Length: 77
Image (cartoon, rainbow, N blue to C red; front, side, top):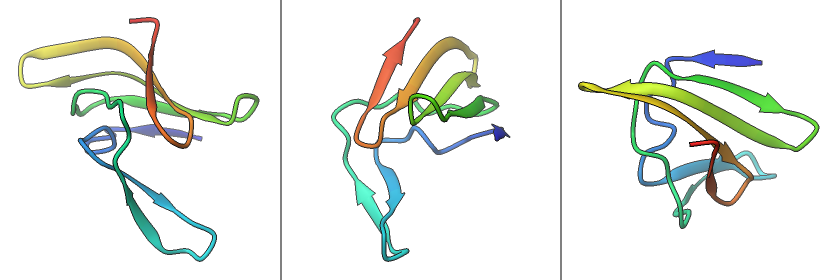
């Protein structure tokens, strides 16, 4: 599954849906800078969401971040 224009996914807090279907605000130790116009896929082999690139104002990102369920990790910066 591919998502484009992921805007607030990497803000200072992340949100997850638990077994009950309720939303829970998470405060992961690492986050990517907030951005828009990104590409995102789910890596089913690793069980991670992968976020690539994007832009914020005049900054263009070419970095890769993965969400492992508890924290964002910067990969291949």
